[in-house]
Image 1 (cartoon, rainbow over the protein chains, first blue to last red):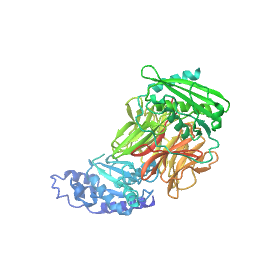
Image 2 (cartoon, helix red, strand yellow):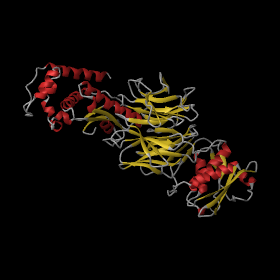
Image 3 (cartoon, each protein chain N blue to C red):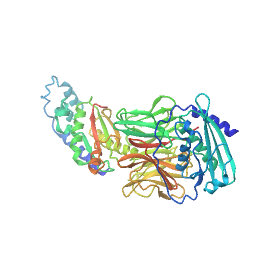
Image 4 (cartoon, each protein chain N blue to C red):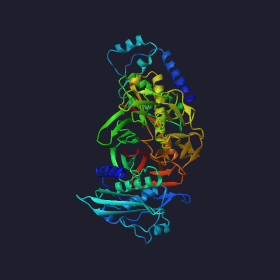
Length: 179
Length: 427
């Protein structure tokens, strides 16, 4: 729990850093005529200039173009659901994309390794999905864009019965378009 | 006479069964520890004319009695057990038998066979009962279970569980089946076939419905299936995960785990899906709810104290009490039918094993010596516990008696078997 608080704090400070950054020029890459919409939202929500400046994330092809967005798995320790610091930038990138694309939806599927009770592992997978869900929400992603569910130990990506397979299966995946 | 009437009624019920036994007999290996001094020695020679049926009915009776752990088979040696002829009680006593079951099968009307069977108290030299029934030739298993119940009830004074059913999940390749079979794993018929995982089957107390969790919509949803038809309804499909259904003893409510408010928490709902109410509020995982035998309490697994342990809360809500204390991993609580005992899965030095706890004294006892035990389920008489374990990398079902002395494995399936749930006494 301590660790995920640290992450939230880190993410928050990143966000704070963004919001103090002076507005960057309106996006040119998209070449969207009439950035009026952006301008409007600029005025209404001056504390969230990231919405305006996150042009690469607004690109429909962002999911396949931006390396951080191609990372859609977050791994966990045994019987744990704290998010390791390594994944902060991944979660932050997905939050940017989801905020830039309010119509985009993501299903967060939590998984667990095969050891122990199936129902408890389902809850453990849920807790992992929930940890990702909470961090995305804290970064400003709307509830309606997210659903956290669990597959428990029922859909193992690695089918072996060793530590390497178990580690692979202690995971939360971001699945776009499935929600 | 009353007994006979009841039996005729049962026989009609048996005659109504749709499923014939087409399966080879189970490769059951029963392991019984101790001297067996307190097991009842019974002789049950082959029934005369039983070749008229599709399989040996006396074989089913003998296996059932052996699986109970309360009976010891006495080989007939050269002795003949002829139904309708007064047996030589002293000769049977000489072979060590306390009881003798004899039977005969004769051609009946309309393609049925007429089966007559008698139970004797060899020590007293008296006949305990004689019963007659007409069944179809392929119903030797259902009839054998019924005869075993009659013998068991007469000699132990307790109801037999031989006509009860179990539900379990089999995974074969990428196919999942929710199966319903006899208590010994035989006669399995699918209640559901799916390309997505199925888990946590739970019998309604009247044995007419099975609640279960399916991933067919890419996330866990709780369904209820009526077993006398193909009707299936959604019990819970809230945002997030829906799992761990469990019926109240009166069948009017279910407890389950939902994540609609964020974390996995325990909720109670009416059997028709109405009246949803949140029961637990913790900062961690609360799951695997089970009603106590009297329906007043709910046992569940929670990691609120830092590690998964068993807790108990009033069905009306309020503060939860911790129930399990030893070790760092105790999950999947199940309450015995008499409400006095709890079994759960505990992790002991990396091995997951079935543990029994006396609720009054809090004394615990590990019942198994395997390493990957899951999903314990009490027999309706509370004498044995069915559970899933792993042998050679494959999921199998095993049974252990609560005194730890009798153990057997149900190994008649080709696939990976898990999630067993023992059904109620037949109504």
